[in-house]
Length: 317
Image (tube, rainbow, N blue to C red; front, side):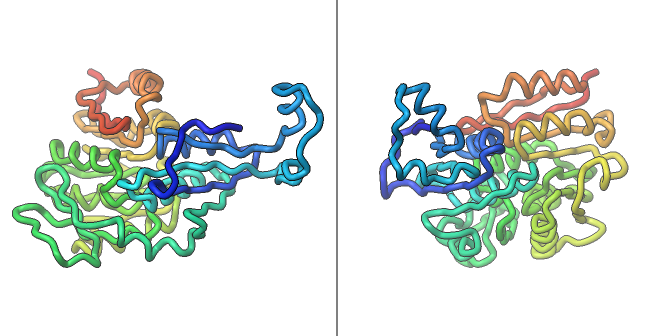
């Protein structure tokens, strides 16, 4: 138990994530990838043992003894300049993907009430040199000569405002051509697939274990004028649902899942294809790089923003 950072009241948004104590370490690692500057964990499952070990006393306040021993609470604090709704969607999606039971609250507001809060944080935003991300409720914008990507994120992760999503979009600009066929692993809101299509890709195929994400991705693609055969998405795992080869594979997820996918991606990537990975926090870089090398990939580009990393890779010669 402990606070890793001092947080100013009123300046930050608090997200509270309740999970079974057996999953507290795994859940904490996922949450800390979203907001790497500190989390506070309440875990009273070993209260008596820890108190005796640390303070050498066996008298504990009654209020503490009443605490739930079966669940822990992870508190994370989001900078006021960032979109807490995107962090919440990411946390929820990744905990569900790992099979971790969870309840998430934000500023005393339960998940069901978040949808209407998106609008105050999400506005038209230029990304890279060629795109402008536009929430569908915003009509006051000047795109200039940029391609407009219309999006309604709902509860699927991916509005373009998170550093890892922006880095992926900027990296995709460099590699997408009119011959590009995209596999989007963990497609979320569909933002990366849609961006590729707007940048001229021939087709994009998304896969996600979250049915809400797939539904949202299809709706967003349709909002931008893309349906089959240009875009499709399915619910399921990579190995179960994907067939064929793609000359661009993108995965904006988290380090652990990327390392798991590294063992499979090669069979879906053409020999001259590009593999773009995001969602990697800086302190996981060494082990992720080792995983790339062990699975036959070499890095051709590395990008960093606020502690988040995106890599462009190809099959090693």
